Picture 1 (cartoon, rainbow, N blue to C red):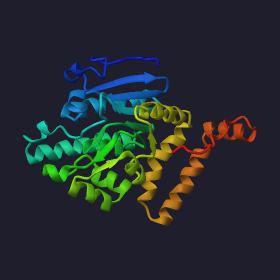
Picture 2 (picture 1 turned 90 degrees about the vertical axis):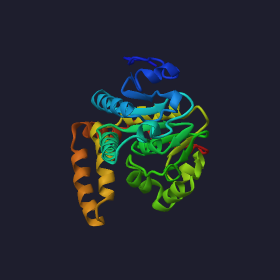
Picture 3 (picture 1 turned 135 degrees about the vertical axis):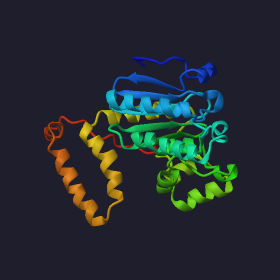
Picture 4 (picture 1 turned 180 degrees about the vertical axis):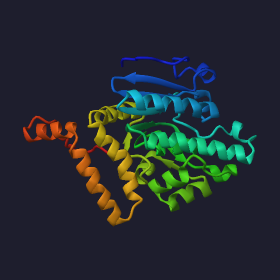
Length: 279
């Protein structure tokens, strides 16, 4: 992997990095690889990490065509750093929540696709972060939970919208009320993950998918990640109406014309038809 640049605290797996840069960044060709690197605290999201993530997401949006987000050490992310949260006033909590919303919106509604590589704990705010990405790859050791009910708090990073939309309100209510922990296979069946791979293989799979997405027409990627979710919020008639305009607009771009001509002339890459057994 060619590494164009690393921030201070270059080795994500080093616990000393928890006192340096909370978020690492590597540009590998057209793919940005973003690493949560507070491994001593299971990559719990602190205020400092949120702000570092904002800078990193903006950077990836400006110079990459797709991005992968992962966690250093044994876990993706164990959620909110409760040590910081416990001393906040209600208004500080509201401001913090709204800041999470703004930054996670930058991921969900930016200009490039984001793929999350999930392993170990994907809990609370970590699951909220993963839900803001467009494709989620979980290894078989990943586990998912929303223990806010047991902690006496409520989701604040967009989970009531994003996670509920993915898995349904009934499933989410179950996790929050009972502390239930879901396996990777359960998460996939609930739409929290689109791929389940062997332990240790999530990052490689996420990078593979990111490279595929990076090879798409940029306008098509933008339409998929921005128009598609908005159409789901529209009435059937309005959604079909908007779809017609988005379809016509993307097809008229010079890149689309070149790709369609390549397909008609049988120069385009063929579909990778599965041979069975892959999820």
